[in-house]
Length: 474
Figure 1: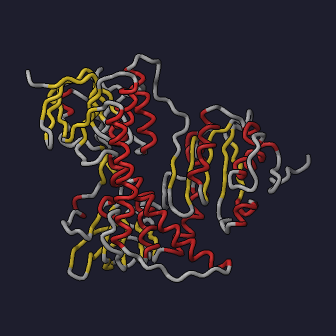
Figure 2: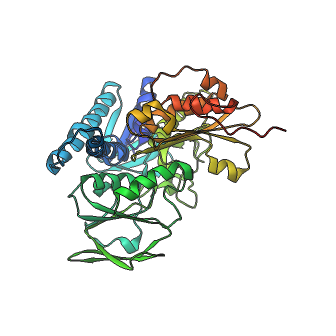
Figure 3: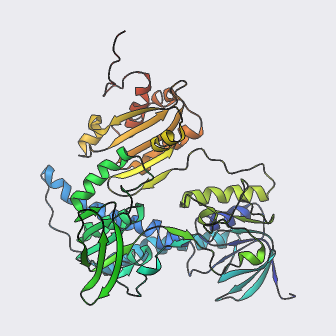
C-alpha cells in the first residue's frame, strides 16, 4: 500500500481513554494519529453520557432544592421549563465548550485527528472510512472504542418513544409518564432528571433491589427518597412485552403485585452497555475477545497482539470514564518503556442521584462474599452539624477496616456530595492508610468530610459525636 500513511501510535476512539492517551503520548514526542468517527471528540462520556447527564442532574438538583427550602421559610414558584434553552445549555454551553477544548488540546499538542471509522486490515494497518477515507499503517495501536447501550431485540420497536440513554439525554419532551427499565445508575440518574422536570416515573428492576453492586445500607436512603419522588418502583419484576400504540407504549409486566399491563408516554431502556467492536475488524488483526466481547488484555493493557493495546470499556469492566483515563496513562507509559502496570486497589464508583452514592475499595457485600476479615464503622449524618444545617441528615459514611491492623479496606458514602468526598477514601485505600491516619488528619469544620474522620475514629472506640455500643464487662 504505497499510499498508506504512517503513525508511530494510532489511537482508535476519542473518548476519556483515547484522547488522554493521544495527548500523553504526544507530550513524550510520539507521532500520534487519533481516529474518531464522532463529529466532536470526547466520546460517549462527553457527548452522550457523563457530562450531559450531570448538566441535567444539576438542573434537577436546583429544582429540588428550590422546593426543599420552603421548609426554611423561603418559597419559590413552580419552575417553567424552556426545553429549547435547556437543550442549548447542555449541548452548546456545556458539551460544546468541553469538546471544543479537547480539539484545541489535540491541535496544540500536535495530535493529528482523523474523522472516520477505523477497521483493521491486519495487525499493522487500518482502513478509515468516512469524512477522510485513507489507509494508516502503525507501529503501535491503542483501541479505545468504548461501549454502546444495550437494547434487547424484543424491545427494538423502531418507535422513538422507546429510548436508550443517548436519546433520553436529548430531552425530546417532558412526558407525563415514563417507564425506566433497569434500576442501575443510568436509569436512576435519568429518571431523577425527568421526575424533577415533571414526569411520573416508574422503575422496573428484574433483580431484588436497586443498584445491585452497592451495599444495601447505602442504597436504602436513596431508595426511600426515590419512592417518594417516583410514581412506583417495582423490583423482582420483568418486562414481558412492549407494544407501540397511538396512545403510547403498552408494557406488559411480570411480577408480584404489579399491574399486568400499563401504557406509558415514553420508555427508557437502561439495562446495561456492551463493548463497541462493531466493524472494527479485530479478527483481521488477530486480537482475541472474551465470551462477552471484551478485548482480552494483560496488566500492561496489551492484547495478545504485542503492538496493540486496549483500554476503557472495550477492555472490560467497570465501564467508567476515570478508569479509562487511568488506563490510558498506563498504556502509554508501557510504550515508553516504563515499568508500568494496571493494578489499582480502589476504583471509585459514583451514582449521581440525590442523594449521591459513592464507594471505593472493598464493599461490605464483597468482603462478606470473599470471606475477607473486616470491621464495619458507620457514622450517621444525623450526627453531623453540617448535614443538619443543610437539611440532609439521611446520609451515612461507612468505613471497612482490617480488624487487627485497622488498615482501611474500603469506604462507602451516601449523601449530598458523596461523589466529591470519595476521593479521600480512594487515597486512603491506595496508600494503605490505617484508620488512625484518617482520624488524625484534621478535617475542616463544619463539613460533610468530617464524617469520614469520625467513621475512622470509631475504629478505636467512639467518635466524638456518636458512641459505639459498649462491650459487656467480663
